[in-house]
Amino acid sequence: MRNNWVFVMTSSFISGFALSFGLILAIGAQNAFVLRQGLLRQHVLPICLICGASDAILIIAGVAGFGTLATQFPWMEPVFRYGGAIFLLCYGAISLRKAFFDVHALRAGGKAETGLTAAILTLLAFTWLNPHVYLDTVVLIGSVSSQYDDRVLFGAGAVTASFTFFFALGYGARIFAPVFTRPRAWQIFEIVVGLTMWAIAANLVIM
Image 1 (tube, rainbow, N blue to C red):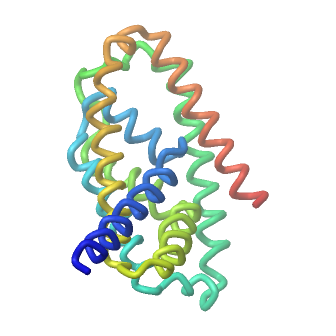
Image 2: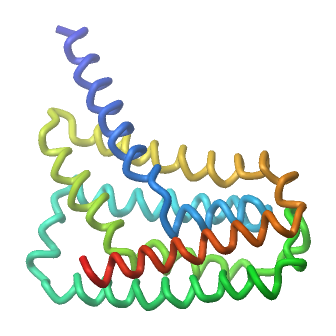
């Protein structure tokens, strides 16, 4: 009996971890921003903590059964969707401008060009203005958790995956720092980030 209980606990935790990690793994605006801050070694700890904490709040809300909020308040979805699209379009334009005009000012591990407050506000916008975040965490993870005997452990696994991923991304980015000592590498990176932001914004508008 004890072995069965341990198996249920382990299975719930691992399933939550695997689902959450798989959802976060896809490239997105939030991940691109964390990667950029990791490459520049700017405010990495607070950035990773905020990403993990934000996901934790949403995952807990989903597991607790608040996934029906979107159906109760239908006005929320278009507000987040179009607001997020506008923000992503603006940020994408900024990245493309940096690619062609500010490339030489970017150096991995160099002097911080973005203040902590500005970085946090940008990250919060990427996180909380993105309707996909709510779909992945509150709705999807919340609904899947109901299929498991131990929803708390399922949610704990999902939260653990989020913190694991963002800290690995933020601090692991410095491995590629030598590549980004070349201005051309930064230029390509900023172009990819800018186009990714625009692609996500377009997807939000036409979804």
